[in-house]
Image (cartoon, rainbow, N blue to C red; front, side, top):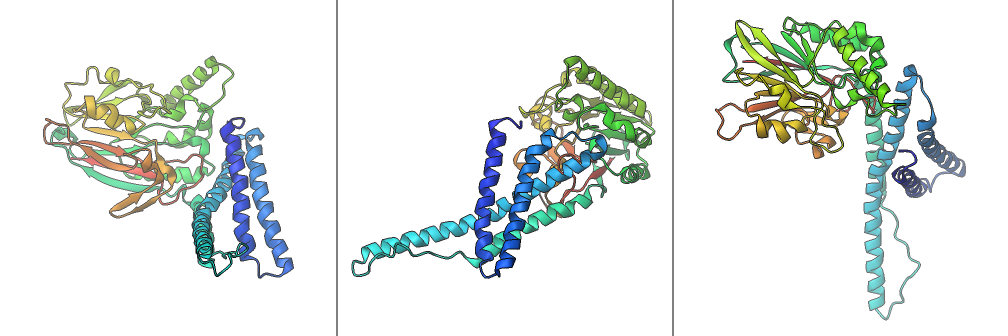
Length: 423
């Protein structure tokens, strides 16, 4: 990545953005004293150059596990600074376009009026309003991202009631706790995570379902949290599947064998936690004399950038006769791509993966996140009524994630513990 043309294009763009942004800084500081200007200019370039140098050095710095959080925080600050400048630059660009149009109009007007000589050296000043609006917008974004660092362990419990006409009587009122995307390699506050697990157990679930991404990259990320997540238990059991991060695909392994050893170790981690890991298979849940099928597949994505390890046909084999079926599949793009198309009798699918991008807006009746431009189903409940099917919709619930990765925070989209009550 760091040696790719894209990487150097990004660095080059950051330099150009800094130069462009600095032109506005100079204009806004033009009435300051000489000493104040020196402080402003020096401070601006020290921060900007330091950010670029750190970005270039980060791939070469080897952090121990306990300081990986510091690395992700530094990267998040650099990225936040970049996007803040980018947002501000949009306002500056609008102002420059305005100035360009005015200058061109003035030139044309002067050229057409032969009695007035054209003013070739005349300049049109920047708009103070747009300059300040850009600064405020950029500063607001950066401040919001910094504030979001404090939200990463603010677990929200979302309670959802789901009605199904064909749910067997024995399962009426069953309480499912759905969690996803733990990403243990990102944690830096063990006590906060313990409180999150305690919140789950306070709900007294009948069954707990985890839809993938236990780690960021390697199985040993769970070493410090085994005695935390082994506290999860429920009368009908704890079941899990793998997510895209669980396979170690984002690590440069010495050999394929070592990568496979890591994956096998991660599978044992699930077992040692007391979780039943479903690998393209199904199990039968029994309650009140009734039975339903719980299917779990390995990661399957409709997006070309993510792998297709899952095999729903294999997991479904033998489950057709059960009146109600729940599918655990990490990536929500799987729902429309295969489940709705070919398995109309799968009543409920649970997924995660998107994290709601850990950034967005959620208010009653409205939600938005940049991730919605990549995933149509990205957070919360979705329904689909198959053509010719009985009058019950298929449902998908996308969990916003228990943990975090990349940006060590949450803005607007908080970590989620989902409590689903079926009726």
